Amino acid sequence: MKKITKIVLASGNAGKVREINKLFANSGIEVIPQTDLNVPEVPETGTTFVENAIIKARHATEYTGLPAISDDSGIEVDALNSRPGVYSARYAGEGASDEDNNHLMLKELTGVPEAERTARYQCLIVFMRSHTDPVPIITQGSWEGRILEAPQGDGGFGYDPIFYVPTHGCSGGELPLDVKNTTSHRAIALNAMLEEFNKRKYI
Image (tube, rainbow, N blue to C red; front, side):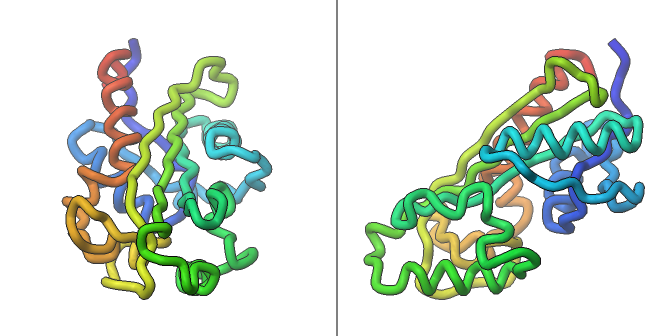
């Protein structure tokens, strides 16, 4: 089985790039964000996390000729009927900032008691060796918590500052990166992906 030495990451999100490179640091794989290779964005037209991840991975590997890895992730809030889900990045509209999205979520949850602010991050990761790969590797991770009433901490990205992590007694925005890389939804899914790579002798 041919070893994998380079993978294009179907994202230009700086936070995701940092997390994934940190986790892949000892794998022998160089992870290159698609923005470094001038890969254009592709519309995320799927209605599920896995559909969007496949769309992005297939696009990146077809454009570059390299194997590609992609994640689609978001947050589900029980009091919002599992919204925003796949629309997490554009919850407050196309081009919305993390602050815009956080502000809207806090506004929609005004008056909701702590016990009913339960939420979880979901992450689906897809790996494709080529754009015609008929059996992509798919892994999943989830991270349970609840939504705070105000942001805490300035680390992480996305909804991290308003996502309370009960196991650590702080927000995702207050967690050190090395701790987040062992507990988050993305860490769980990525570690499962590395296990699959080892099983298939890709690394």
